[in-house]
Structure formats: C-alpha cells, structure tokens
Amino acid sequence: MPEPAIKGSAFTGVVEDLLKLVEQEEISRDELHERLAPPDMGLLDEEISPGFWYPMASYDRILDLLVELEGGDDPRAYLIGRGERAMQRLMDIGIYNQFASLEKGWTRLSGRVLGTMGQVVYNFLDFAIVSDRTDEGLDGTQSERFTVLVKDGGRLSQNAQTTIEGATAALASRAARAPVRVWGSRVSTDEVEIYVERTDSE
Image (cartoon, rainbow, N blue to C red):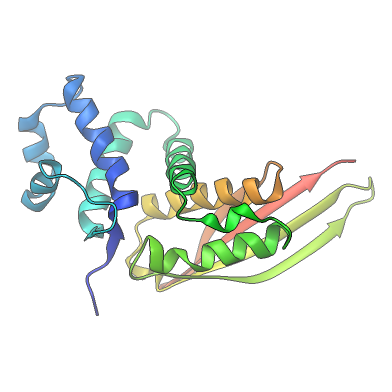
C-alpha cells in the first residue's frame, strides 16, 4: 500500500502560508524545528512542484500548526475557508476544466469533478456520489442535496477532512450557481460521508 500523498498543487498552499507566518515573525525557524518533523523542514526549503506527490503526514503536521496559529476561536470555519480557497485555485488554473460546460446539472457535475479528486489531488482516496434527492417543503422551498462517499478515508485526519468539505462546498456552489451547505461525518473506520445541500426559495 503506497504512502498517503497529496499533489503539490494542493500541498503548496500550506507551505506558502506557513512561510508567510515565518516572514511575519509569527513563528520562528527554531520553533518550526521543535514542532515539525525533519522531513517537513526539508520540504519548506524546496520548491514545491504542482505535479509531484508529497507525504500526507507532512501536510497534516503543517496544517495542524496553521490551525493552531491562525484558526482562532473557530478552527472549523478556518479549515472550510482553506478548502474553499484551495479548490478555487485548482479551478482557476484549469485542473477542473469540466466547469467550462454546466449543462449536466449541478449534482452530476459536482460528482464528476469529485470523482477525479482521488487521482488528481490524493493518491489514497476514492470519491463517489452515493445518493441525491430533491424535497419540497410546505412553504414551497426546494431542497436539493447529495451525499459523497469518501472511501479509504481511515488515514485521513479530521483537519484534512474538513478542508475537503470546504473544497466540496466551493465546487458544488460553483456548479449550482448558488450557496450550498456542507457537513461531514465519519461513518466507519475507512469511510467518510460528506453531505451537500442547496436550498433555493422562490
């Protein structure tokens, strides 16, 4: 089984943000040596290639440190925001060129993009939409939702899971052309479900 890894196009964000905190003297190099593992420090000093794979363990340790330094009173909101910005960067550089065409509908489009994340961003995860539905409330509000199953998620940290929820929110909102609500739950040792809901009031 290969070591869990994340593509440089996503890894570069945590490295750049941590180095920025060093430049701003929010944390010193000496403190980094105390808080991070030697392989992490080596990665901070090399140019991150968008197409290379980097250890998920290093990503997790750097992300944990960023949450401690920048997460404030609402670390979940901080991580959701990180995930949203990371997905936006990937969409902006054209990795997900499926967004050039939106005729397939927001649920199917979101599922198609999410289905590629295991290959494009993570080398150990598999994403699939396992359900979708539309409900109409008594007030006429349409509630559309779908569930994403993340397989092989046993090696996925809670902080990394939350950033994936944020990334899912960013792409689903773009596909839906409307705000969405996203939340996740670990349903077994190796499986995480992410729930996405769009509610439009006419």
